[in-house]
Length: 84
Image (cartoon, helix red, strand yellow):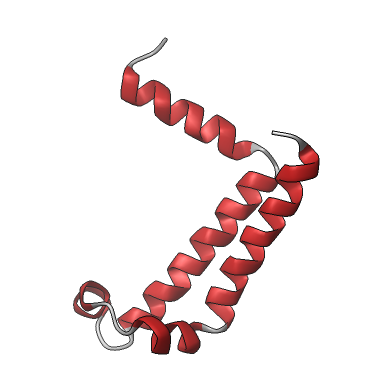
């Protein structure tokens, strides 16, 4: 993928992840609580889970911008199809 497309795309994904972490309450009002997170993490677990998702999205954005994501996906594909 061309750096002229990859870097801005990665930055956009990072900003989305940052916004999820920064505006967790807004996402909580939009999507509501997550029963799995409330059961696993206790009271306030949904907000914590939204923050975890935001951090994960931000890291994926960093991986896209630096082209590490292609190595990660290639390795995952090799594990799944048993390539050498």
